[in-house]
Image 1 (tube, rainbow, N blue to C red):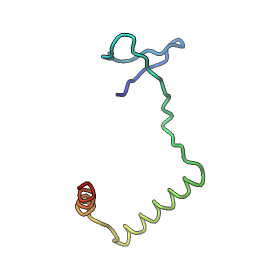
Image 2 (image 1 turned 90 degrees about the horizontal axis):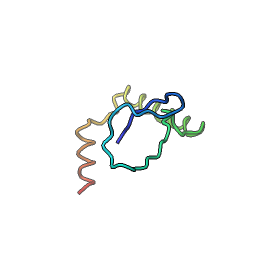
Image 3 (image 1 turned 120 degrees about the horizontal axis):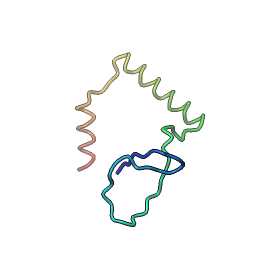
Amino acid sequence: MGVRATIRNGRLVVDQEIKLPEGTELELVIDDEGDDLDERELAALNAAISRSLDQAARGEVNPAEKILARLRERRR
C-alpha cells in the first residue's frame, strides 16, 4: 500500500483517506527516488547497458515471446 502525504507546519498530513484499523502504527520511510549503487556498481551497470545496446544495434536480440516462454518453462 502506498500513501501520499505532505509536511505542513512540521506535521505529516495524509492527502487521502486511509482505511486501517484505529491505532495502527505505521513506519514512515522517505523515498529519495535514488538508488543505493556505489560508484563501482553504477559503472558495472552502465557497462552492461552499453553492451546490451551494442548487441541490439547488431541485431543480436531475442524476441520477447521466446524469453517469456523460457521463464514460464522454469516455473514448471
